[in-house]
Length: 124
Image (tube, rainbow, N blue to C red; front, side, top):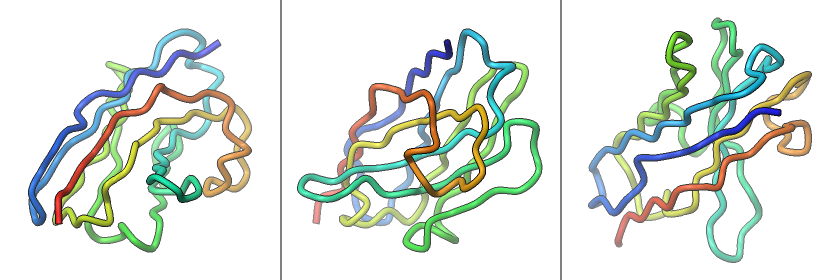
């Protein structure tokens, strides 16, 4: 089992920045991909960003590409999501996810473990 705990959410004005953290524990050696998803009220869960746990390529959703950056600290087993130039439409609960055998990083159904979520609010 892998446990994921997100932190760093909050309220920020449009144009501001936030950094989310996701601390992983347990059988982290089994992970091959870490990702971030978000879900706004009344909407489906949306892919935000992902990266291979071992490093290398990163992937972003179209709506955040160029504004958000995913990174990791392997020693601390933490994955970060740096969010810049935030917009009201970025308001959502953000979830960290981990997968053991991910093929398509954008598909939430392929992820095995999920955090509890952290709220990000950007007032209009």
